[in-house]
Image 1 (cartoon, rainbow, N blue to C red):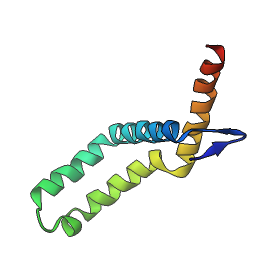
Image 2: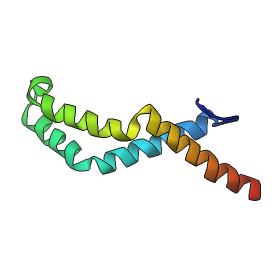
Image 3: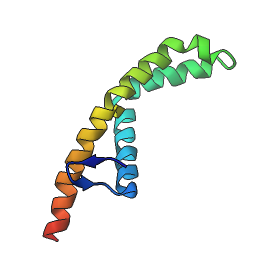
Length: 89
């Protein structure tokens, strides 16, 4: 669980936020992920060696959206929007 200023997300909120960010990352990186998937279908036993370049590209792309700074920004935005809505309801 992470915190922003004095507000803290519940475990459930944080898990939901991470799942949403992961889904967003995979959508934005879809062409690169598909290159890796295609490579893995081609090589059964030697995926680690044969698809190393595609794997690295996929990890780099996903990391852009799933790094700690990105998650912290998403958490701050979640707190701004969702908690504000809860107060007005």
